[in-house]
Image 1 (spheres, rainbow, N blue to C red):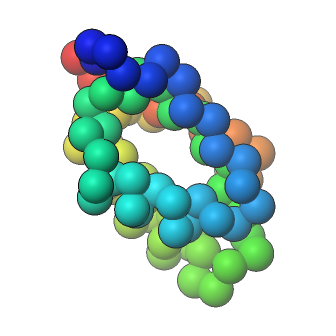
Image 2 (cartoon, one colour):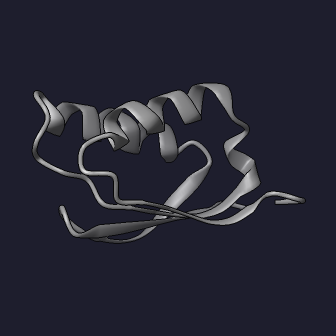
Length: 78
């Protein structure tokens, strides 16, 4: 990643299901080195939305660790 973001941390109480798909669609995710996400269970259909986001992230990043609904870390695949 050049001139990008070293760490993006999202703990936004359910808004991650709106923010991340928009970010993945409209931003060059290869400019984000590390992503920390806390997914929440307070949204309809959160489980399938989470799966779709993870599948999209896996195109550019690999999951380093995952503590379900606490935090997960994704690192850019170089």
